[in-house]
Image 1 (tube, rainbow, N blue to C red):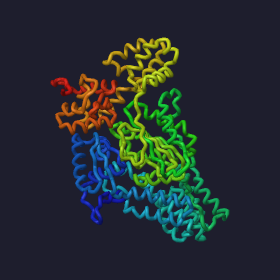
Image 2 (tube, rainbow, N blue to C red):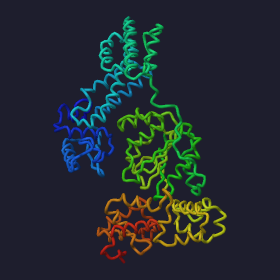
Image 3 (spheres, rainbow, N blue to C red):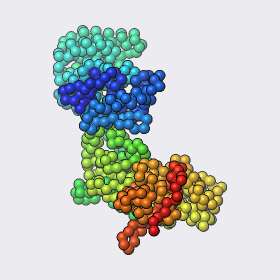
Image 4 (cartoon, rainbow, N blue to C red):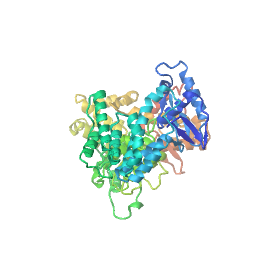
Length: 609
């Protein structure tokens, strides 16, 4: 399937154009294509269809247009409803604007490298994709919004192609084309300068000077400004007869990537505490070793419950080992714990910008971004931190092919299908580790003065590093509070979660986010299980609360264990597993269970005897 907007907007299957009806359906298609797999809200779509005053039924009409358009799509191309909006997954379909941008970008890079024949061919192929004025047959609202940007990209590609042809000595073929371009775009100085050079090389020096004077007059009359350096430089070069047969491009551009060293990691964590075994293991992974680098694991995965300190550990260890990576550190938050995880396309954009790629030079398809990302890292020795990954499909495109680069991945769910990975399943702090972190934040003197209260506070945090950090930070900002007072506040389970929040640090919010992402059955099971009076329970408890078979109950319970929403309590002599909640996780689940009326009209669930 092929999508076209560089001319009349349409969908093509092979040589046949599919019958799209009316400008509004074409507008929906073009707007979703130009959104590049981002969600467009109903309000945004309504704006490009009707402007500031859409009809009262605009959402229903958009639904109808999207449904009709969806019927024409095939293969892996699809329109997806997400929240109050839509996005278009292009998949393997061709999109003429994507192809144009890729050819144009590659052609300009060849021009910069003085590969003039290659540049001319690539840029000519890019321009050949145009079949008329862009965005024909859409609403004027969308055309006015998007057409200038796309037409400007076409003009830049055209100017670059003329540069390449001039460098190849094809000035005699260019003069007729340039006459029309100068007349059509009299204030476009680069084209005027190119016309002057072509005229001069055709022994038409007087006309070249006249072209300059005309441009100078127009700029003065229209805007009251002098000619740009590009135009003045062309004039001066002709005036001094200092123009070689092969002229370097007038519109020189920087290379796609700079030589800058990326440093995207947050600063070090001065009060970091504990995790000595994990620090040592990760440092060994990051340390360069003799031997075949290709045999080393491609990534190290740090997994565990929300708030366990995965990101803190990854960033801290990467900072400690930064001398091993002379070509810099990359970081991207993949937002896997949100309802809108970052797509590989956008994650690659963040990483490429960190590597020095200008935003306007970013490739416009995921595959092209992967190729540029891996090519850019091919001869570098960098560390990459992929934070809060949702699944393997999200992170596999972000892994560099160069084994000298090292990748740290943090994730809540256990990832088991990433080839050759090492995994650290991060556990809770023991009392000594939690107490050491608490004392570093609050101060040893306050802990020594109230040792019993300090122990109680740490125990209420149940070994969760995020909770310990919040408790310590709250007391550090409240020097007039006694530790005993805060311990008393934490002792009430009904208000404990409210006490464990400070600014953007919030135990309840962090754990609740994991629950809200669950599918219906595991979510129902988790909230119902939180209401049990028993400290631990077998998987048959899940079967009971859901009314499902024992096999399905075990599958759901193990799924919750893999997501670190339950813990393994013990394995008895018969090999039977029992499960439990972390203390704070149970409190959050119980709040949700009551908020969502899970207990309304139902008896409290119990474990079968």
